[in-house]
Amino acid sequence: MTPLEQQVLDYLASHNVVTLATQGTAGLWATAVFYVNDQFNLTFLSAPHTRHSRNIAETGWVAATIQAEYHEWEAIRGIQLEGRCGLIEGEERETAVSLYASKFPIIGPHAPPQIAQALDKIGWYKLTPTRLYFINNSLGLGHRDELRIGNEKLGMENDHPVLNSPFSIPHSQFPTIS
Image (cartoon, rainbow, N blue to C red; front, side, top):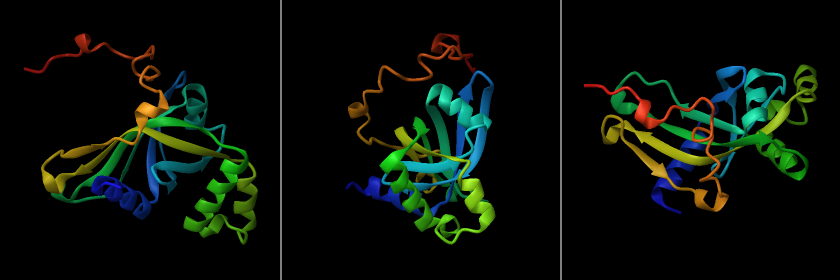
């Protein structure tokens, strides 16, 4: 494992909330959800009727950020990523529930009745990053390192949502700043 991989995994383990950005026919949407990581994959839960869940069901893609609140720009650290996302079921779901309950015991076997009832109505999602950057402003304003996590093996280079999206704008049409 590289030092950057370890740094990213440590950061993921020490934080709890990921902000998801989704896109679909209902438009763009962002929401914050609690997550647990299994290596670089993130698991979260959400109600399938929510706008972000509907967008995920429609496109299967999300962008996301994980960061704390900082008061000095030099202290900013965080993760920016994009990846494939979808509902999980079966054994994969059971493993995710177990990991999630380890991090957030309130959903475990002794969950309050309101939580237990809510858990019966939600979906479990897995976000698999296809691109991930670790931001570390202590190394300079806007410094970020790309973590390559075997995306070539995922076969996603020809299935990118922006390149194949009706919402995409060709680079040649970007406004120039002089």
